[in-house]
Amino acid sequence: GEDVEQSLFLSVREGDSSVINCTYTDSSSTYLYWYKQEPGAGLQLLTYIFSNMDMKQDQRLTVLLNKKDKHLSLRIADTQTGDSAIYFCAESGRDDKIIFGKGTRLHILP
Amino acid sequence: DVKVTQSSRYLVKRTGEKVFLECVQDMDHENMFWYRQDPGLGLRLIYFSYDVKMKEKGDIPEGYSVSREKKERFSLILESASTNQTSMYLCASGDRAYEQYFGPGTRLTVT
Image (cartoon, rainbow over all chains, first blue to last red; front, side, top):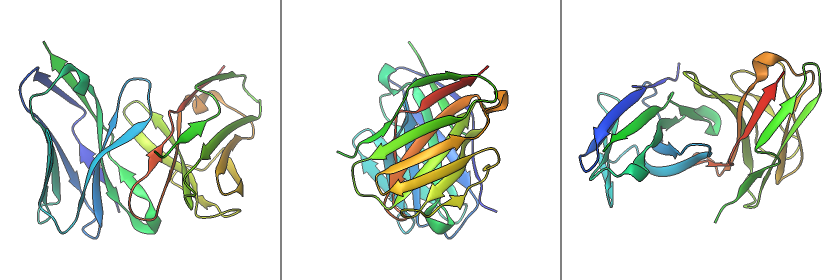
């Protein structure tokens, strides 16, 4: 079945890079996504990558996709206190559904 | 900007009450979704809708029903609320196979 796995917690010092990893099972996924959820808010699409790409960069964000290993990562350069949030990895599933991971809580150390 | 609004940010209801959660989107999206979010369980899909008056069960539909009488509005109904339905409820809308836009969520407490 479709499944997305990610670690639940990551702690990073302010100014360092954060790398959040994710594995997925459905090799037919067309899109892979990273969503951000700040405290008390809904989910916000951070970035996405089409399945025929292996990298996408957007300012401080870099997404790497290893389709062979079904591994997706999100790198946040120069992590700031405002990056503190829960980050959800997701894949496009059948019937236009999106399959979400359980979320990685990113904690920023001063 | 896409806007998805939910009728309440916080709601407290008693066991056995009928509860309506409303969601409205302003981008003419065909697809709308209801999720619940619980600690350690992530987002779980309750119901979704492809078009007006059309609905499909998600992963955890038991105890819920939905209504989509107009394209912009998708309602989640708890026929008889129970304490295990205390959760954060998130509505989303989006175009096919691309992305979903989320509302701010409704935190429902059933006592």
